[in-house]
Image (cartoon, rainbow, N blue to C red):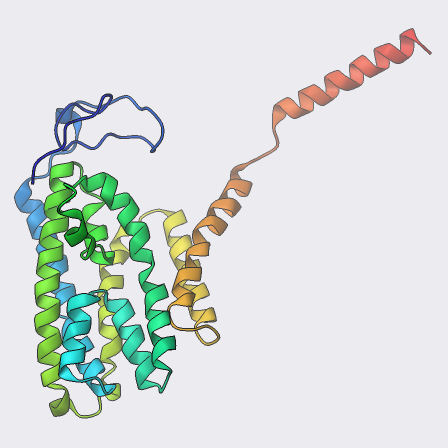
Length: 282
């Protein structure tokens, strides 16, 4: 993939990611000041995530076949939808006897989050226009988690590509194997395989929660999702759990914001001026 020309004010090195918040012109760091990460290390991390999560496609294949979908329907879902949470939500709702349109709507709402990932990744990866429609199919939780921490555009592209390719191939292969072997397992509900994919992703995500704010936000999001799960359609509680972020930021901001000493000085000055005025004009 060809590197994009560095815009004015960037590091000047192809593939370097400028520091600072978006929308604000920040001082560019030289390329040698950026933390160096060898391509092999990026590939290793991407393969680790892709293999770990890709193998859980077996759980989806078993669950989907157990819910009544045919082998072809199960495989097409993994090939075309390719977002595990939405796929599990769809087959779970169908297995519970839900309306197919309602199940599809819940899966759709759950997959909407990938569009927000795409807004950030499109700027970070800056892929050629011809490649973007194909890359969009790989914009999911895992590829986003691997891509965002990379220090350079080159590393981000490698992480995204290796994670997406590994996960896509393995997920679809294990989906096929799981659907074929569903009959041998018997009652799939007794195995609890529908929880395998979320559990794997949470295990990968947990080490990234390093600050107190991140842990509190994650805890509140989980609490919101679990509270709303029994009363809202599948997928909606997950979307609403995103409200945890602005709530925590608002509360932390109020906690840190103490009384402004300048306010007290201004108040005393106003009172002094008012007293002087009253003395002059009783």
